[in-house]
Image 1 (cartoon, rainbow, N blue to C red):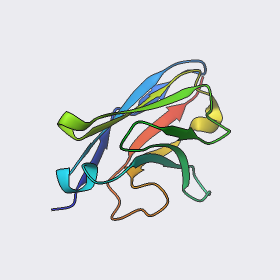
Image 2 (cartoon, one colour; image 1 turned 180 degrees about the vertical axis):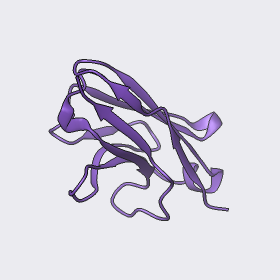
Image 3 (cartoon, helix red, strand yellow; image 1 turned 90 degrees about the vertical axis):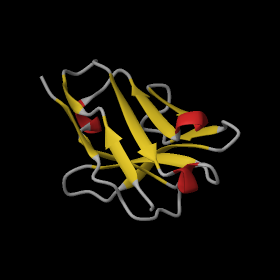
Image 4 (tube, rainbow, N blue to C red; image 1 turned 135 degrees about the vertical axis):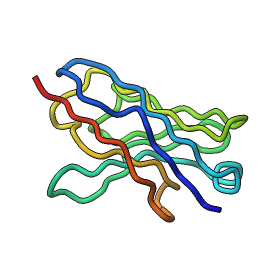
Length: 114
C-alpha cells in the first residue's frame, strides 16, 4: 500500500526551528528520490527540497541555506530541518516524489508567527 505520513509541524516564532519527518512505504522510498513540498494559503503547492537515492540535494532559492533535507533509508524516513523560519514559510508541508508526485499524504502544518 502506497503511504506517506508527515509529522513534526507546529507553531514557532520567526527565527525558530522545526524538524519535519515523513515515513514512506518501502516500495516508494527504496526506488526513488524524495522531496518536500509546501502549500501556503491561496498559493500553488511548490517543491522546496529534494534528495536523490545517493544523497544529492536541491533546494528552492527561498529556502536555500535555511532548510536541510535528509533521508534514513533503513527506516524509510525523510526529514526536513528548518532553521531561521520566517512568516512566509507558513504552509502545509508534504513529502512526495520530486517532480512526479503520487498520492498525497495529510501534510503537516507549519505556522511562523510572533
